[in-house]
Image 1: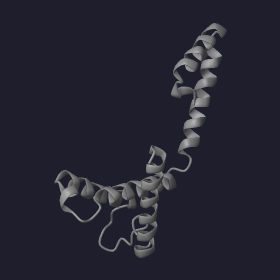
Image 2: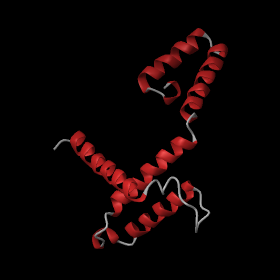
Image 3: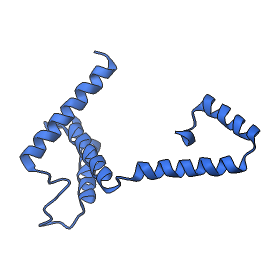
Image 4: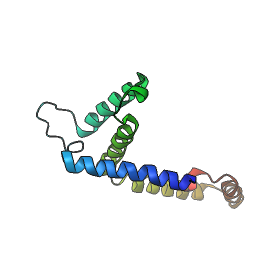
Length: 130
């Protein structure tokens, strides 16, 4: 099996697990009831992630019948989903900041400096221009 197929297979397993757990428990990780805990959804997920990391550190990968790695990946995916919900415009802001930086540089640089910078970008694919 090639790398792409392996990645697809693993991510498919994680997707199926997350959907099954969401159907079983509802959206409790991202929208907790908050009866016994005042933790934010993000803090709650971080506690769960810490718990899974502790189990891995203590050697439970060999001893547990629970799939700690899949659970950890699942919690990280949920954290990513939560982060995107909480920061929907973050990518737009970064793009606007880079555009503003390019405009400012364009105003203060000579044509020769711009050419050299562009040549370096082509060679190194600087993140600044992405």
